[in-house]
Length: 398
Image 1 (cartoon, rainbow, N blue to C red):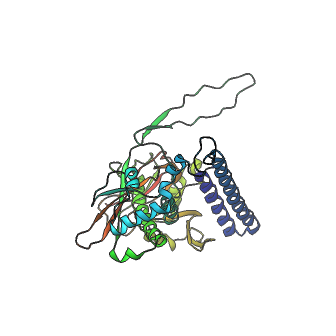
Image 2: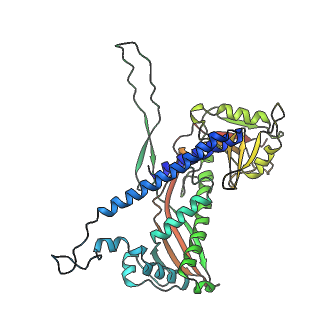
Image 3: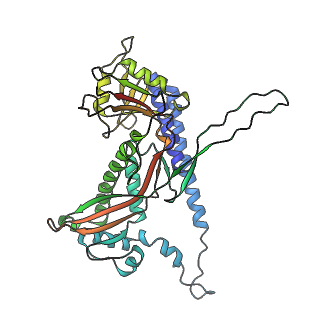
């Protein structure tokens, strides 16, 4: 099981446990929580086994003076693979970012061309992993999308027709079905974020610097990525869900002079195909969600609910369905310039985000402040691969 599958299974079990606790089924909820613990243990054991297997694939070099070997532990291939994870390189990278000190020659040859004011450098894989882990924690939508790592410039086939099974009599045959294929073109868009390193940071230790760098880059990257997931045009950046054309009859309108009602939610829920029932979530701003907080159904029961999960963070629900809050949409009550989607249902596993998380930086100095600016660069693309789970709620402007 890879990391994406593990996170998806864990998220699903967590949601089921929350719903069981809400319903008062404590024993079943405890069983789900035990399943989460078992899943964590399984993933950890599989990861350790895979790491041990990879380690065993490396044949140790003979000791110097025995056969044709060199000094034990100095395999050149291994050394080259780990060069950017070494403490020496990470310290050199810190000095480059904080003080503008050029990388040593052996690192410059690998990292690319270097100049005094424009230095290309590779971010250590150790630091990249921390950035990625931090982004998964900070993001609301990023952990939900499907992550891929295809090379840029290729076309990925996706099925446009689902096969159908049919009952047949004994000895009979079913009609052969041709599976239609669409293609998604993977492009390589550059995502950049600039991080300022002031002169006051020159006394940082390596650990403090890397923590500061990780926090700064991850926050900027998550904001830019998730904003593109919603509003990206597909030109120069990923294409957002709100820029897609919704499937026919999967939109609910709210008249310009009206407010959303209980029927608005039930109608949208009714338009969501049953095949996408499990993973679809509501998406809206916090301000829009609060519009629904005081709403009640026909029996006087509130349709919105806020729980505090196992980690203490608020979990929001509408009619029992999870709500993912974001700051990239227009809120109900805001001034509109045209018909605007103010909420939508969508299964984010149907959105593909493609990147290998290989990050480099460009470094330069701000002449006005004398700060060292590190511009982190990542190549990525994203697009919805299935829109049948998309149900929009549109506020009419007139």
